[in-house]
Image 1 (cartoon, protein in one colour):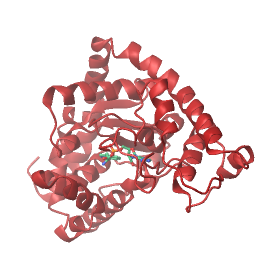
Image 2: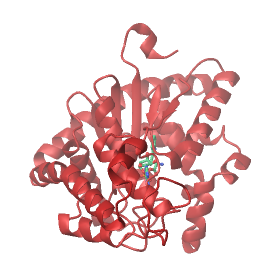
Image 3: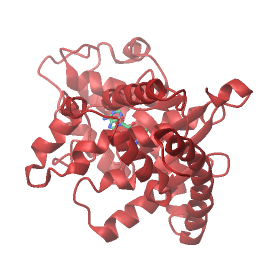
Image 4: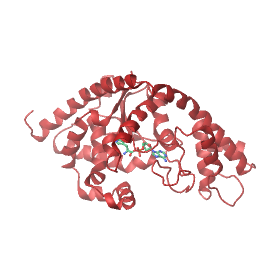
Length: 335
Ligand code: TYM
């Protein structure tokens, strides 16, 4: 089934929502892994604006954030010529396949989605149907491209499992139609925690601005946020779940250096929290500096970005249409 069987590179698909400012959680949990994987795979990296409107968005801001995120993908090191980088709303097949897959997904399955429970409890005034069927759209994103591997952070694991279940159900009902995708998680960075509440994940929508480091935060802002990060009263650096704040800082450090926690502990053992924070801040600033520099060059060139969006959306649409036609035929539509 997989196109990789025909000597083609296996395919990866992943995406980030253009809602809010993307964080080092998104960067270390997803984007940095994409950059490392891009040469070995045929890759599609989507800016998932259809997903973003499940929460209220201001139109002008959403448009700006979408273009910004395309620029950030490139600034982080993704090649827009060899990879397909595009906004989801430019490829109408996402929404079409999503409808069809809605009819192959049970409400019982969606009721179990922890992210829906979490997001609806935080947005009681706007629990819309899109928020509820969001995981089906995510399944459509992935299955549309016969994706082999989906590099994501830990919080998307349940959605990926549902995607696999939907693919298997469809394949079983008709005949092999979709590649059943596998998740890929990085060794470190799959779950970066909030700096202010180190048992919760770092999130773009964190109400406390000190909880998350945005990719475009200035060096002094990064340093101050890390200085203020919540630790504990143990007063000793250990890599343990009993000290989640300290553990998170070590993880963030390792994301930059590529070291294991054990290796990093050689440096931090016996030191104080001030030293740890200084090292983590320097490492983070150093990691983000070239990304920010490239971003500010790219974002000035709207024409270049819009050209990338246009050509890449066409490429994505071409691949997507092949799957969609197959699906439509199987379910019994005249094609
Ligand atoms: P989103 O926009 O919330 O996050 C984008 C990616 O960043 C990862 N991530 C994290 N990783 C580590 N630590 C964190 N604190 C952290 N926060 C976020 C996420 O796991 C994700 O990989 N539903 C998805 C977007 C999506 C998608 C897809 C992903 C839509 N369709 C198809 C893959 C394939 C989402 O809301 O991600």
